[in-house]
Amino acid sequence: MSIDQAEAITRKLPYLHHLVLPRGVIDLEKNIPTQDVDLIGPTATLLIKDNLHPALIYLLLKVASQVHGESEIFEKKGEFPENKDYQFALNDDAKEFYKSGTPFWHRYLPFWIATLVQRFIFLVIPTIAVVLPVLRLIPQFQQWQIKNKIYKCYGELKVLENEIPLTATHAEAQIFFKRLDEIEQKVRNMKIPLQHSESLYGLRSNIQFVKTRINLSEGTP
Image (cartoon, rainbow, N blue to C red; front, side):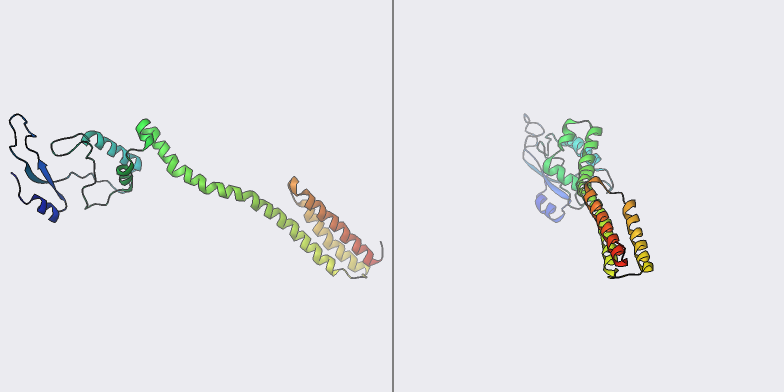
């Protein structure tokens, strides 16, 4: 039967929808029904758990489009699936489906391959975007470590040089030589890449210079 207040009822009860059974849609020749019939009815809602995999969501919506996408008595072609139930939050992947349709890779690839592609796009690519800058920083960090070792030895050498008096006894000179040997031993144990060899040889030259200073202070050039 036709409901006179169909539109008003659906405004008050959002889970119901105003449906019109058009005149003659049942039988055009016999003109059944003889006039438009206003009806109300709920829309079947597809509910999922929050942890359902996105690939399965796209698959469900794709099948729903194939099954319910054709025109029927109450709906036009392509009208369903559609979000018409506002009692439940719409899944983010479903929003994307309604906005852009089936993802490109799901249209032309088998389901299992499309799933792998989707994982690659949403997991691997963001991971690469994070990892690449980190990988670029590794060589810089290694160079900083190498320079830090060299500069640390330079610092110890500078402190030692500043402590050398104009004149020193033999015993004092031996103490300075011992400290200098410790610095030199650190330099020998360093594993330095070829591009930093110049800095390393410069450090060794300065060590020899400080040795000369100690000998001069002791009075034995």
